[in-house]
Image 1 (cartoon, helix red, strand yellow):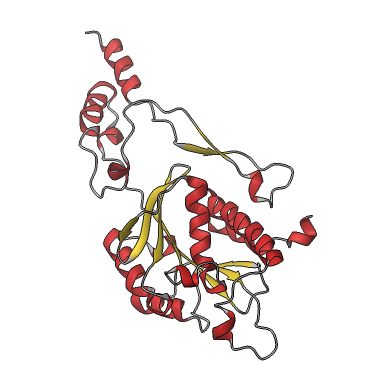
Image 2 (tube, helix red, strand yellow; image 1 turned 90 degrees about the vertical axis):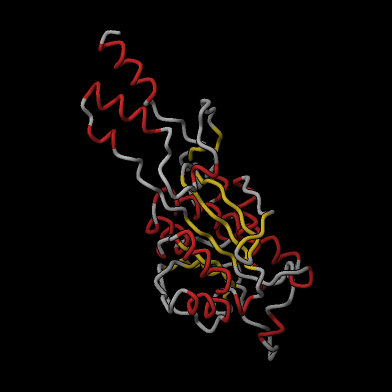
Length: 281
């Protein structure tokens, strides 16, 4: 076979597999989650399976292609195994069980459910004491977790996940409710303390005391009058609150897509400068 023919064959073998999802540009209203839509692109056969994407070892099937390419065009880089891409871990804090579903203390769970539904990620498996799912946002691998340990012991789930998958702390986003933020307000920070939140306190303790991981706070407002905060966080939402919170969850979904595909700074700017529902309507 002529060298030119071999090189042509290698070029075909090395053509990149298409992305599973791609992000469309912002529409006329960049702060609305609806302006960020994901479409599926038709993929060629031979795409890696989910387990292969999350594997900690290089794919053996890539070796023959790299070897042949090196022999033909002298590309030394082709002989190197593909660089491992660490997944993002997005954890929503809350309490398991029907009695806590739809309450203010469980907005972290609701947020993870919003991501899972939008991105087609199944949350049916149970791992590391959590409802757990794996998938992709764009071409970025992502893990979703809802600890089932009850709020005050959330770290018993988060710590082992981070340790087992060796996830860098800068790629661990914890989402939780915040009494000190106005209702349905979002705030994203690169790091910080627990702020008196017992779930976050547990997470920090099980990450060896490190506070250097991003977090997304969802405001649930202050309790009215002299109501005990412990009772307030267990209250459900009224109709108007439900509408506003659903809008906020969609804003948060847009922020997650920006975070994974464009970086923390752009996502934090989007979140922290966002306007209220009334200002956008």
